[in-house]
Image 1 (cartoon, rainbow, N blue to C red):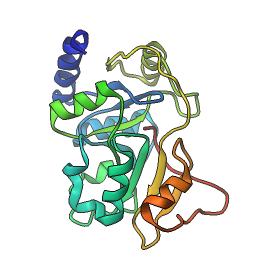
Image 2 (cartoon, helix red, strand yellow):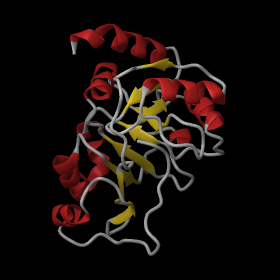
Image 3 (tube, rainbow, N blue to C red):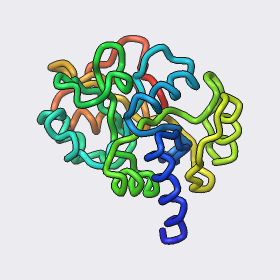
Image 4 (cartoon, rainbow, N blue to C red):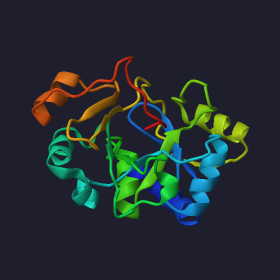
Length: 215
């Protein structure tokens, strides 16, 4: 990882300056910044969203332990770092409204890509993550694709280049806002494994999953 030292420092510098950064996830490249009004407003504009609802990448489950509850902690132990996004209530407004969905929920996960995870842990703060592509276009699996897509949206962010990524499904999305956990979006994780961890079958809405944002 030593060859990435300079890139990680540069990514942190851009984030701390209030800028957006393209970063790798396990599958595709994402775009995000610190949870501050400036970066969040720019991100909504680039992705043509009137509200937030972005996935928030966090450095560890410990950083939000009080929001997880028993089932969330069990899922975090089993699948974090990894491609599981948990949708949680945030009654004390620990997260800025601009990072949350219109219903006040926040979608969080600990990513497994070593570069982005290290960036989070060295920065000590969460960042947003939405797919680094034009709305409706395929996700970017190379840094060049991500950079060109975001430039076409009107800005040129720093790119934390991790080389080609494998692509594939976005993270599995599970809501823990109700008594019965709900599968919102299918993803890389096996639903039977999730059921075993939470010790009851997840509620699955008719018509399949939904979910918002990349990551």
